[in-house]
Image (tube, rainbow, N blue to C red; front, side):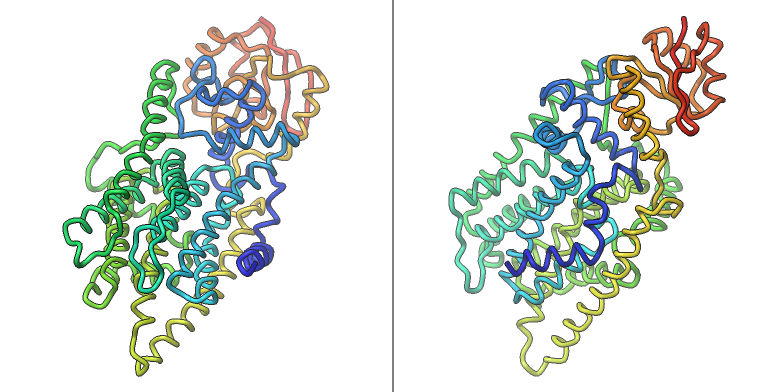
Length: 499
């Protein structure tokens, strides 16, 4: 009850509940519509889990290779039970994430009192990125929530505690496997957590007197089992990509183009996203603690130091390898955040063990935590509001969701529906307009090659054109006999295409 009360009050006061009824908007609106289009197609086209589809028919029939689409599939089920409302997807994401936060709270209680545990939970959640995506449509937050659950079951069952017994029940083993497996399948970035656990177990076998891990053989067995789902889905997704000529959502290691480009990628990333993860100077303190932990081996619990250090080094290595993709994606960092709380556990237990004469250090640590939490809370609250305020830099929507939401109802009334082949323009992202209108088809953007317009018209023979720019209509006109205006709404025009 303590956690539930804190969690509800925290989210209410920081403003997270204010966005539950909002359509996909804000930073990475296109990525939000992509994932929602998966749910929308499950909803309309039947619950064929192994054949995820998007609205943009880039691949003939809309079937795409993608991450394990569990969240989109479950959201589509909620749409069927209730109504088609993005609220249910937001609620689903929030509940999965909240489950992970509760698991994190239970984990922190193994090492800290409830007051400190809740303060750390608050600090962890007051990040603008976490606040924005915790009830969003991207799978990263669900992957993070499940990873937090897996970490709790790992500590409970395998890490030797000073006074709590290791309890590896069959139920805990199953939940550890399930949460870790789904976390990796939903977002490959969470493989960092699997690799950490693997190397921790391996080193504990080599040096059992220094690093106390219970039943490492059972741990390895569970780790192997946890890979079955993500590996199986990876190969299935590769099959979909080859047979349907599609590649969606999947992270890829970029080609190395030279050190200048590599350092430019770092410059772009550092200029934008660290301060959206945690504000200055909090981010410097948190990162400094990560580095500090690496050099305090003689003074820390050896097992906790090992877990934190391996995870930190793995996180930094992954970030360095994939920095080209991280530089434009704030949400990619979500699955790397466990490095922070692992670090807090390692350092926090050392502070607790200081002798009484060092009371000032303990008091200072608590005061700094509370000051940092207060500062970060106000910062996160402000930036969360800005991410939903139209006209603000951090809102960054490409399309006005409310305009197209109103247009959808009007199109249904005049008989335009998902059976039509629709051409839309201009849309900077594949699924935005098509998602909002609940239609299938293809889109064009301003700088697209003219030859693609000809190819798509000849190949797909669309019967509806929806335009928000007269320039787009002029581009299309030479390749059809005419456009018959059937509806207008604000600056959006809808035409029947005459061949």
